[in-house]
Length: 502
Image (cartoon, rainbow, N blue to C red; front, side, top):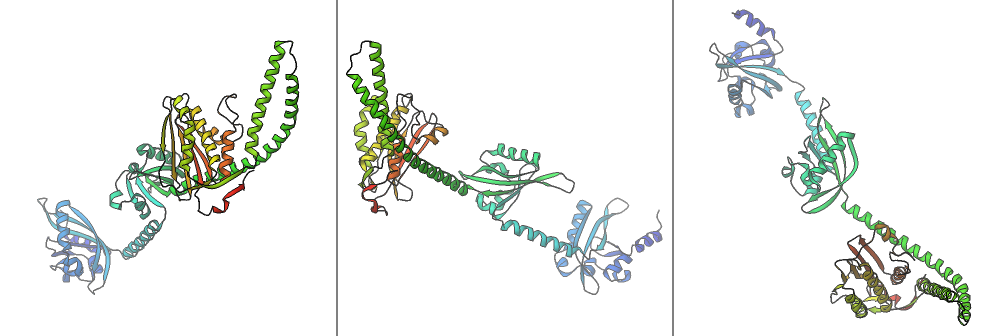
């Protein structure tokens, strides 16, 4: 059995550590020198007094903190507490206490042992830590980019204000959910990102799609792995940028740039073709003159006659090509007036309707009433529509479902009138779409067309200060969209006869 004197010597030797024993009601039984140094009371002053009356401040006493400590010790055997303690002279200080139960000879907890140390820098460190935490959170919350962290399994642990606004939910609705539920490609996308992170440690400017309330949001993200003090991966952090508007603008700029390049190219080709036509015409006229003279000759050999006819057919084909080239390159004089695009469509259909029936093509027309008048030359617009319908018929020869849709509408900003011609034909590749308006480019056989119809149509619409665009997918069909300026929206000055060619 340990001598009580030895125990007292041990307790009193701990001059920098407070050791106090109380019963369950807080009455002090043991109060060592370390406790005297820490709280200012002598052992005699403290003995049989309530611990909370001597060393707790008013808030802890009112909150019955000692009683709560007793409950935890009885149920768990021990607890630790970090709270404000009070000195005899009234000043307060931060301290940390380890509190355990004292067992009697029967093994039952019969008292409380408290070991307490003064932590003079504890509050300062806590305050600095809190300030740093608040500063960091303020930076994250102020970021215009959405920031999210997850654990290693992909469950969300933190989101900033920008991400809440992006998703349209409050923080408590997001925390704890798996990040993949917001990805368009779900868990597969989450696995792809995690695979890249495990391989490279971080990824930059990676693009993917989120799906939020049925809408697709284009995201550019930079992600990194998060590690603990031992170098183990504990999660991920992602910085998301919503690039939906930027991507749409980029695509629009690309389309505008392509249109500009096409317009410049067509003008240059017009000048080139004009010179080529002139050079071809002279020898062609001479060739036709000699052919006319030879036609009067009597042919002794049928084989020679056959060759002559073939030569004459070749010249005729050259003449047709030259005629088309003239149409493409000439500076046409158009009669610009107010025109009803619906009238132009119906006029063209009166000519082509029987041809459509002969090819088994179903016709759908959507011509809303009340469209504003367009500014243009109705004869030239009808020529363009005839060409587009002829191309559509050729494209649907092998199609099982043959449908031609012609519709008119007012453009998005109300300054252009649209005519759309859509077919269910074979469609085109992206390479073919890029060249479709180029002279002599055609998807037809050599004896079925010269490849100048769409080039001429392009020049006509360009001269109207309008646009013609094409969208197509192989096996899905093609849609041509014509846009003409609305009559009276600052375009009246081009009324009458004007020279808009080349």
